Length: 332
Ligand code: ADP
Ligand code: MG
View 1 (spheres, rainbow, N blue to C red):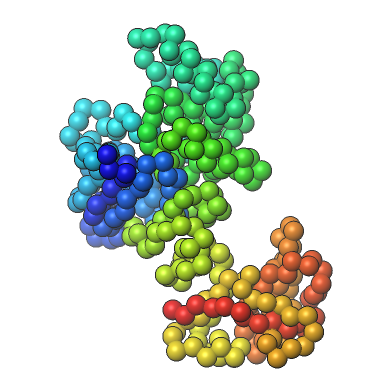
View 2 (spheres, rainbow, N blue to C red; view 1 turned 90 degrees about the horizontal axis):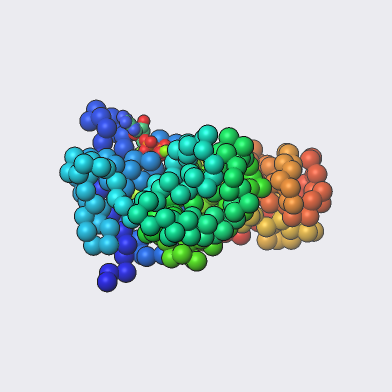
């Protein structure tokens, strides 16, 4: 069997012809068992892409192959969607007055009651929600509701799980746990996962592959750390790492001579020097932003502002002068 579970070919879906909307000529393959993160701003076409893969939208051009077979659109079959794919959206679509157990079990048919019970209990264990079995959805936190929604989606021998903004309802602490859970569930069950988010923190560390979309176009695909370190567009560096973007004239004022229009670097590529050395240039600390275990410094030299990471909190303070060297930068 082909190792690709999904092949997206020339997929195009435009809502209006007058202006750019939806997705344009998207191509990629996904290997069985991979976790894929699709990152893009709000309105970039993420939900359109997921719905198109799922067979929920009539696309204008192109096709989606699932295990080598073309996914049918809503105009080609009575019930839209695919029985081996499940989509979990932001609203979870749970029966909020029913109990956790029943929300999950009701996704299964009644033909084999014993198997239905076993599968439901096993899936609750997988997602660590066994103890919530008798609770109603209204009594659960956002994170717990999300686990129930994923359990319901997974219980029917699902091969491909589509998650639309899976972490938007949960707080930062729970996010970490859910991210790890999704990775673990994928590894344990072999399910392939595609999740989309506008927040790169949701996907960067979790995914096997990262796909960046902008204005409906796929602009880069690769392993998260590779994409982060080798962005092909300024936009990618901005969305992934809050990069510093300078015009060539600004860069020149910092001693960086660039033949291209734009110079880009991440704050952590700026090396703060202790003492005065020839490798560094003198900057003034304009502001210090508290970031938890580190600080971000806003630095100025010759009227140009950059940002740098300071791991030794409190080492340099506002109005101090520091030596900094931009160790690595990219040209665009
Ligand atoms: P995302 O999920 O990345 O926020 P969407 O896929 O929902 O983006 O939307 C992409 C673009 O297509 C947006 O500009 C949006 O306004 C437009 N769009 C989405 N759904 C429809 C629709 N049903 N009718 C018209 N335009 C739509
Ligand atoms: Mg969306």
